[in-house]
Length: 482
Image (tube, rainbow, N blue to C red; front, side, top):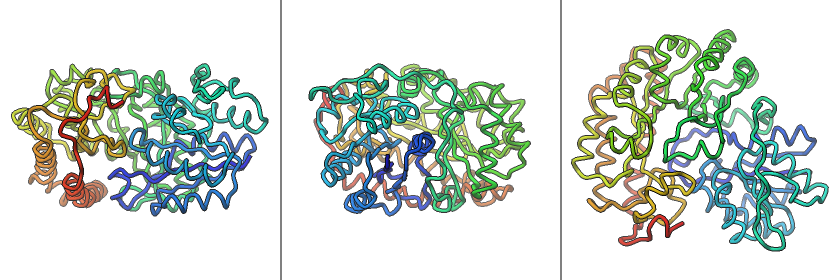
């Protein structure tokens, strides 16, 4: 079969503002096994440009595929764009199967199949093996009922098959790196870059996150094989920056240390960035020198909040003292810390925001990433927020950078002011400016200045987006909205 993988342009601020662009790992992970099965596969990355829908349709019709596969890691905020593009492609090529995969369709499959007749099937959960079986069934004209892990229509009714078996050996399916031109993808200020996964899932039960339910349980790649793959990308394709998509790659200290040592043995000059938990950093205090030697330059630490009651509500399982110690340890070993801070888990007051700002200053992170709480339906937090009012009903804005929940204690403009004020204080305080422009390590100085340049563009853009945006004064509850 001729298969076209489509990465649609995402409306999120993070996709549109930076000049750097990372490859769509999810589609590449599907593409590799499909190529190995003998299919002719092509990737259209419409993020470049970004490409308008009409141009995507022209590309698709010129290629004349036997099936078109859509997927996007943007979940809720990416769905309206995929729906628009998929509808246009289906109208231009009647009868061509349209397949949709990812987090959002996995949990919203029934309403998608009922509302979007052009969607042939939905891949639910991990896609590598399911996509292979689905393409085989479509190629041979077999009944879709025999393909585990999908949703489709049977006699006009939306239905789903039995869940697919969880992939236990993540090394059994390769990434289709040949589908991209590595020279087009960059991060960290123009350095050639890719996105990878060492592990899938997370053993923790944070209520705002859907990792546990989507990936079922935490698993990891073979540490040595994974290190060899990163080294090959460096040597053969000139990749310099490795961005880890894992929520928590450091769960197993034994496996993680094996990976670090294997990558060090490869003697490649890579820059590694990704996310982890503060308690894993504190646990690994005795091997943080290996982190740095392997190439780690920045970790995003999901602090989320500093209020003990709020942390208990979202079941973060974190401790304030641990968060502070993790930042100290990273700085001691020459690794940047980016702290995420989420506004809106509870309906904060001015006093709550002031207290949070003071706590963040005491943590002293190198960088800050401010987010708004967003109650996606597949997360336990959805139940906590079910009775709160929605002020932004455009799903394209459910990207963590727009307010979607009302606050009884203050209007949206005041929440936004606290949000931007906290960002400004953390990024522009004298201590942060000194590190940004005078850090003794050149490559860390480069990293912080790159992030600052993006921030100078994003900060006013977000304010402009707020000013021109429309918010409901008495919107539906979260439960009613979904």
